[in-house]
Length: 374
Image (tube, rainbow, N blue to C red; front, side, top):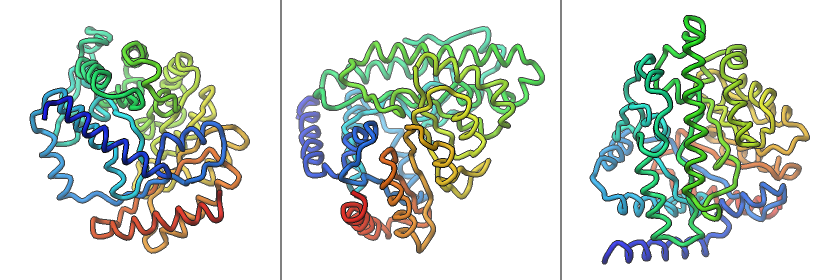
């Protein structure tokens, strides 16, 4: 079987999976959410906690050699993998290699065994000297362009192409330069602003380039897919520091986007600082997460802050052991008055042995939605 036949075989399997599981189609649910309309299915995800042994195996698998076509084919195969736990699916292949996708352009090494997370930092003076990375040739960008061309050549138009994890200017700076980024505004403010200018300009320039390479009919228009800023590292600075030193660069990106989807990474002060100070926030996230650096923003508090604004709220929560069903149903009830909600949960106490229970719970929640919500 040649490579094109392999693609055709996998695409056929995906088509059958999508046809049989319309009630788990995340792309269809997104259409209802963007319109603020009731959707006939909850389309929620239930995941189990990480298993250290499984993580080690996956890390070893990542380092195997692949041709570019084989790499894209593996991503394609993964599109219906969530169905094993009855989780949502959508026909979209994402570019890049996780959170380090843009950081690699600054000459930072990515470690396959850790999910391609960055290792080591860049000398700040060297980065300032080098300036904005080449948006066609640096880091993983040639690989992304190669993947785009392969996807366009081997897959039909209904399979979308997802942007890489773009992160955000401050996240990129933190991963590239390390802890010094937290003190630099006070030790050398001019140098800090130069670094943020570089990461922001690179972010915007690469985004523009990717949209040149990807046809309009092949890219998702859902806000968190196309207009997202991740603020993980903002959890490690104060709201005051964010407003003074980071917010101006986020605003520059929002001016370019026109609207913005925010990943606050749980932090309450990050949630409030972004939703109150950035214009045209159309998507954000909230939910209970036990182990966080700066606490978590509750769903109740998030909804209170959002008020009457038509902002999509992605509810992502860790589940209390023994009360999982009750806990999730409480969130589903919120959808009676708010159709702009997304639901995702993780049982940190769940392991592989609990997968049958997870699937059983999925079916119960589907039934509850059809009887009492929709």
